[in-house]
Image (cartoon, rainbow, N blue to C red; front, side, top):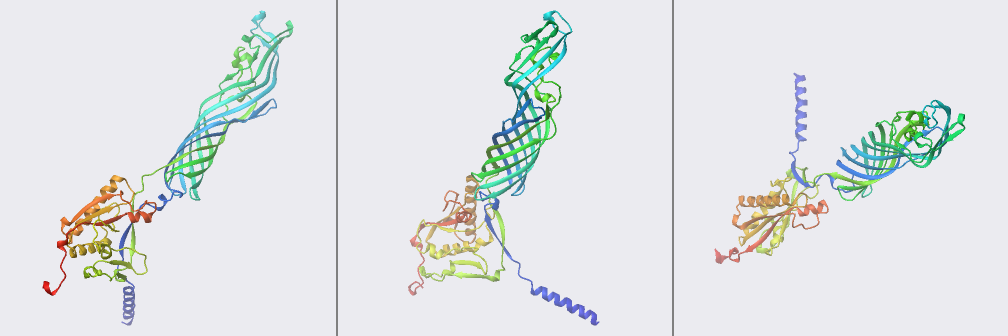
Length: 502
């Protein structure tokens, strides 16, 4: 029995302790803010969808090694145009895909003599001989060959951005890309190739029969045999300057290296007259020969362009604020009012929770309307739910002071109830929302006993701001309901209580 009594005592003590720590359920009020913080600051790294376009150029090189002192390789340059889309799933990290167009060049200067001794000329019809032996010579004299390639590239990558200062952002990224070659050609742009043949049996040297390739060529051209699809790895660094909250100007440094060797042929000679019937097409281009090793496309360059954020105009949203229990609220009342001997308790009420910041500014109708000046608006921060004409509970106390004022001042025969918004949202939407909110306030006043003919609801939308809406504090001031006395009738002023009126 003693054991059960001990257990019951412990449970009772726990229950009493839990009850002692229980507090009344907190009240919840709502604040309207224009948008999440990352959409407000122009200089913040932002989440969202972006498109970009930039243009530039740099070292866009048809790269290869020349393993002979007879040929000298020079770097080539080209242009690049990039278009792409990126999605930043956090303020700093994102993924993206692009479509790039680039041109590439490779320039080689060749100086050497290619000799073939005792070659059989099977078509020496100019001397009526078949199978006549000859010594053949191909002499390259400062022959400069330019290879040009154009290609499109589709990169897919991971990207990072970070805010620097007030308007700058630093970006970086890595990608894997597929490159598709669109056009490819080679052409000599200077120098010459001289072909001659010596027939020892006839003591004859020929260098002027073009039909047999025995002449000097200054223009040689053709199509290099290269693979058309290449996989590459790339990276970039970028600097963004925010022109507006959506538009950036960008400066980019980027590069891509393609994997593997893209040459498809490996001929022994640059010029092989017997294979092609002594025509200029016998010149195959340096990338097709054994002179060139590891042919590839490499680009490192700079571009400048624009980046645009795909986002709708920021819309307001509602956030919850938990207030302390009602019994901790205090009432701050202005008791100095002499107009018509009225008690300011009827009008001036400011409600603040102890230990908290200011929640509701209240409506001091006594001070605002003591002169009953027609057309002088009294702005009131009456709160509504986000994008709604439904009144927040915290606004009832404010409007009840208006009800009291109108009931004690029947000489106010017409009052305009006007609603105003900030500039978040479209003009048409804000105008309609303000009209609905003004009507909501009027309906509430009527439900509390105010005659409908004394009230006129009007919505002005964002057309009458009190400031430029440049900060959230200023936008909060512009989100208001105003009460404007439009007409007075002195005959309805109530007479004071005196012995003569009893």
